[in-house]
Length: 394
Image (tube, rainbow, N blue to C red; front, side, top):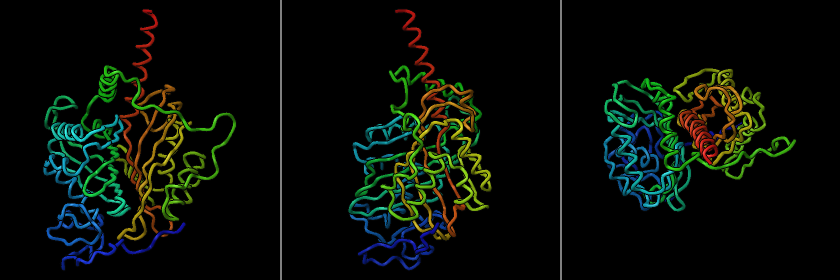
């Protein structure tokens, strides 16, 4: 499996020269991995990429997504949402969907109220596109802080937390018009010492009171009857050979259940950075995490929604995949909070970043929210109970 051993993408038809002290970027589109934060929000850096319609402070798309995220979340300039999001933004979250800018503002304020000391550190940004047709960014953030203000988690207890979030954005002329955010809320809830079952139950009760009986609507995409999964993955969303190879191995593992492919694709020393802040080592660990996830939803279909890639200053290429795993809670696995199999329909939105080097994956970062799945189970159980009560009273 080959990698794209090429230099960081440079802008086309951009005549302005970067400032002299542009290290470590050297006139290229920014990369986060080896840059200190001050290098990611430089003052007076001339554009190195087409940025028509963007605010002049942004020299490239990585500068844009890192800087505006920092301004909104860390500097608390929440009002920038009005100039950086369209009025009809659609924001997809593991607990539901937001359909307008005002609700994005309100949701942001509420999260900042609950975690006033939270700080988000850019881990890396994978992107594609241009300023004519629009950019797509996949931004991995490591957040940390303490729970010091009463909010949606309940009474503040001062406990600290660290968690990962991936935000995928579609951006045109300075405005985000579609966004998918997966935040590992289960990691936060556990580190804060909350009763996970009670917290998920409270969310489920709120959803039911709003007239919802499930967080989403959809059916499993497995072929009916005795047909096996397709041999070949759908590669229409891929742009490069490496992206096509990535989609095929993910299809082989998750849909065809060929877990042995993990040993072929991952380096023996691969690092796995997973949900609940797991830091694991080696292909055996990757296999265990993958088997454990599929074990909880053995009939699930893995459906990639978007893929993009960028060459990496650390060598090799980084690939970002946004995906949906949809099935039923039919078995035991690593989703231990769900308990014994309930048979309930589940839909999991996740984001994965893969670092290929010398033809093998040497690092994987995967983020999904187990709390969303627990809420889905509890919501379905509450809906069943309400239906049973209604039938008895009829």
